[in-house]
Image 1: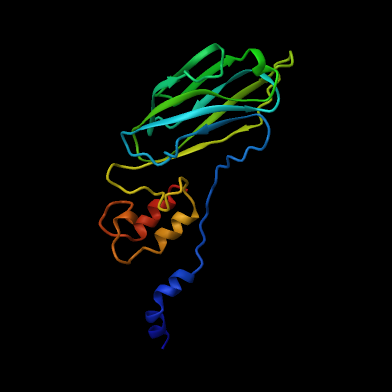
Image 2 (image 1 turned 180 degrees about the vertical axis):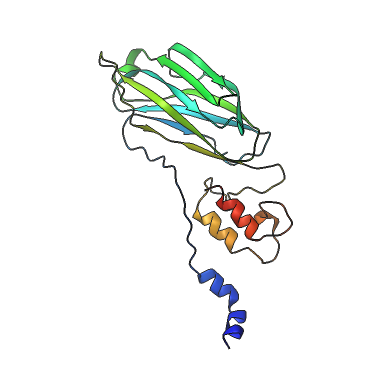
Length: 224
């Protein structure tokens, strides 16, 4: 009797079954302090070979007159091709932006002058162009960042920086951002789970093996 009930209500049971995922979120909720912010134009899910443009901004509540730091990235998945300072708020560079695609680092240091150093300020530091060279998840993060106060002592007022996660895939494979909202979340995992072992839909075939099954679920979960 139970077997017959399960067979006739299988899909409803699957939908109603509790799904628990361990999601590790790198929060970009940085409060109202002094911080660095990485961002892209909703392109956190690029294809190998594509260009990825990442903007680094500074946000300050306390007046500062100098910025600097080291940016780390995975050199097996991303290579810097250029750095644009056309829209930069930095007026003087004590250390020109310099990067190594072997070590996966970018160093920079510069100063601000004028009204920018006397009041709260938000501005672009530079825009980094990456070439996506490998699939999988990688993070772009600030290491040892500095936002130095305009107080005569050069006090580091930095309160934080977000970490930008990039999820690259091979050409021809669908994006893991299944619900197309620009972020990877539990919603994507739920949508994929409910499509497993049902009528084939290439949009959910993340590994391109011609079926939607647990291998696709594992592939998605490996990105969290």
